[in-house]
Length: 126
Image (cartoon, rainbow, N blue to C red; front, side):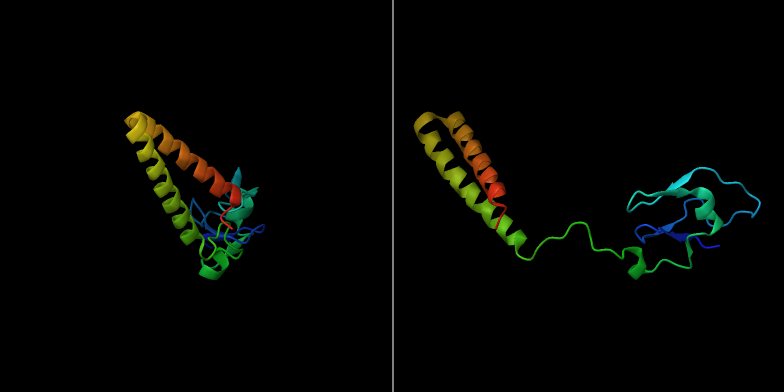
């Protein structure tokens, strides 16, 4: 028996939580849940060796593509958008503070930056 099992649904290799060795006559109840895809399987099948693999390999542990990938250049686009929004909000907030007081400056700055963030999200950083 192995200490690892492979999810038949997504192919993730997982470690058996209770260890891989049980007596052949042992009765195991309940269900095992895959940590990657959430599929459920009978504990008796998992610990009975039905889905066993010999060892965890990096290629079989996560055979599908990652669920979240950052596109090339996205970090730069986000940085520039935040920088421009901050400069714009500071300029307008400071201007409002000169004419209407410090609290008005804060309010204008926050509103401008929030509007900028909404606009950038709407454009989806294309």
